[in-house]
Length: 231
Image (tube, rainbow, N blue to C red; front, side, top):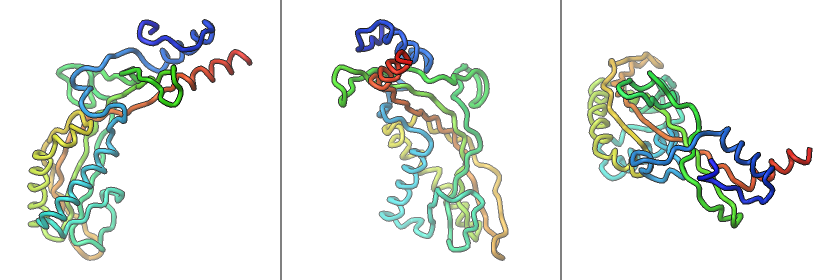
């Protein structure tokens, strides 16, 4: 660790505590081409992707009016009572796990890396001379996206349209930091009786690989180390 990160403090005992704290968080793994996509200082996890997806769909709705009757409410659960909506897009998380690191294995299977990995060390602008350590962790998310409609035709039509939208605009999400967006297939069509109406859904399943970011400030570690010694 010391060849990558040297604490600012001059007391070797304090420095040792700081380095041990960093070592306990996670190992050194320098970023590769896949990881360096987007602004990994911020990270881009599933909530950010869902927010951006709904922003994109609402912007397309405003500009094209092609599917204006659909409402997008990611805060609602998959099976929420939607009697006040004509057509509704919903999502649900089928599975979420640490990203698979073993080649040839399917997502959520095989060897996974559960530790935070040190991706970068940058200057702390609030505390000159100190560093900010950027740790990341990768996740595999399998999600279901589906339109609910009171007629099967609209649900089916929107499913094909949504598939095309995500294929066309996936590079926007990638530029923002998403690592992977992969269409896994269309799930079995569903129906649900709600308030004396039959609602139909045509779900699409996607694999979304994301990364969460943790920022560790050397100044904070130093303060903790000094307090530990004083005790």
